Structure formats: C-alpha cells, structure tokens
Image (cartoon, rainbow, N blue to C red; front, side, top):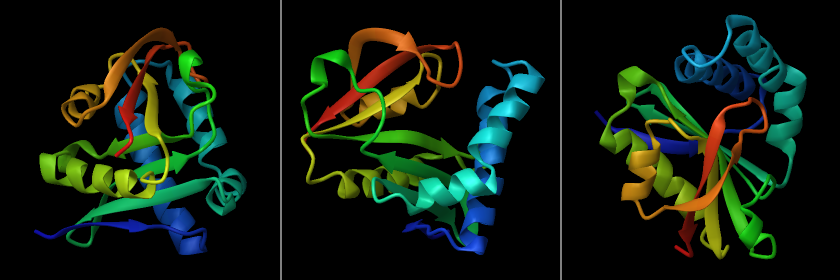
Length: 171
C-alpha cells in the first residue's frame, strides 16, 4: 500500500480531518496517563475549530498528514515556537510539536514518511527538537533516526508528565 505525506491547510475539510485524527491519536496516546476529564479538556481546548484555524494559519507552523493508501494514518505539527532546551536558546531551531500515528497504522514506513517530511521542512535550520513525555514509545524511533536525548528533564506544557528533549543536528 502506498504511503504519502502531505501538507494540510486550514480549509473546513482539512480542519475536520486533522481534528478527528488528532483527537483519536491523543486518546490513544494519553488515555492511560491522564484522568478522563483532563484528557477531554485537553482535546476540547487544543483541537477546537477556532484554535486549529489560528494554528494552521500561523506562518510559524506547518501541519502534515501521512496516508496509508487513502486512509489518514497520522500527523505532525512543526513550528518554530515552543520551549527550547535551555542550552539552545540562541540556536536556530524548528520543533516537532506533535507527531502521532494511529496505533493500527504505526509501522516503520509510515513513521519514516512522516519524519522525512519533517526533516525536509526543517532543512534550513540548525537543529530540530522534540519535547515529549518521557514514556512515549516513539522516543526509541526518534533516537534511532539520530535524535539525541538532552540531559534536561522537565514537564510537558499541557500536563504534569515528566518529559525529555530530543535534538537532531542540522540535517
């Protein structure tokens, strides 16, 4: 089955697709870590139409969807905004702010396609970083692709979950 990764824009169809995909992925990702109300509040706030329109129309952001055949399998959100590792405050960096793949489509080819597009977008920057919760199973994938875990440990902005920074030098 063909795997492709495409940019997604803030049309009604694009927002609806991204919101549905993001809600399902967030539920898979955080259901065992958060209280149900906390997860529901996070999804309602982060993926409501008004917020998505603002985020998708920002010149600092890029949104991608990876497809397995014609089926949306995951997405990535890339931005120049966000909390950087402390020792890299003055470095030109892009951030993978969100990277998720539905469990039923989470295979090497799908992950690779989505990450390759993220790397292409970030080519003109010195580094690419990810700030993710410490137990995320995708961390091993990112490390296998050249991301290095920073010693700095913190908490995710949205939740009180232990987090790590992963950084990849210029592509």
